[in-house]
Length: 271
Image 1 (cartoon, rainbow, N blue to C red):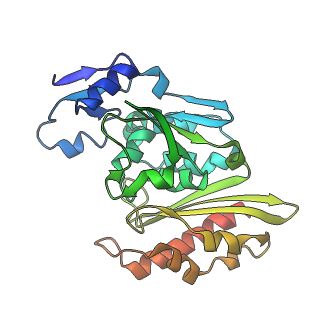
Image 2: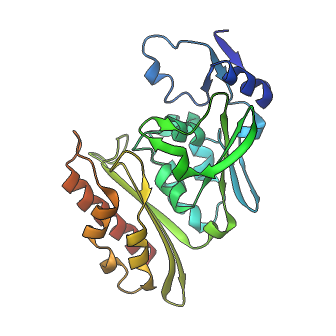
């Protein structure tokens, strides 16, 4: 088999168990293939159970849902950061083809979708030979290009719990230019506010280390009066939670300062 279009999820799981590579939008797979895409490859983009957004006890986002579909969906204000990120994943052609599941399985440290999903306390749903399992997104992402995906398993959906759909969120991204760029730093912030008080905060930062991560110390500091919340974002707390890396795009010190400033901007937009 060189290329095969799966008709059912069961068929896709069987082929994945035989070592076939999974193809959804192809926006990561094709560029990484070089001159020739080596098989076997199984196309899962057409599987209905892997597409679309549905409501139940929270939200379920199929792994093959495209960024354009996410950006245009009627989602609660808590998902605004995810929709803002969706509009910054490459250009329009990439957004029309690229999928949220592919973005996660590619496991780039600068994957735009990860910080908003961490702020939404997302869980991944994996199907495989032993049945299905769920785990927090933070546990699924093991490192650069590394995920907790076992032989024969397929990422089928993201789940956002109902409790995480409260409040509002914002996404901020810094790169060498405004669009079509790998981030130097990116942040997602979700705040719940009641009677002028920040009652809950979720802050996640990406592109500053091997994996995106939440910053509990920064989240705790944001609790309290909305007035003055921006001033409670301390660069030292941000740096302590990140252990930022240095590379060709920026130094560790610059990344820490940039992440702190992006968090302040996101909080300012929300406050």
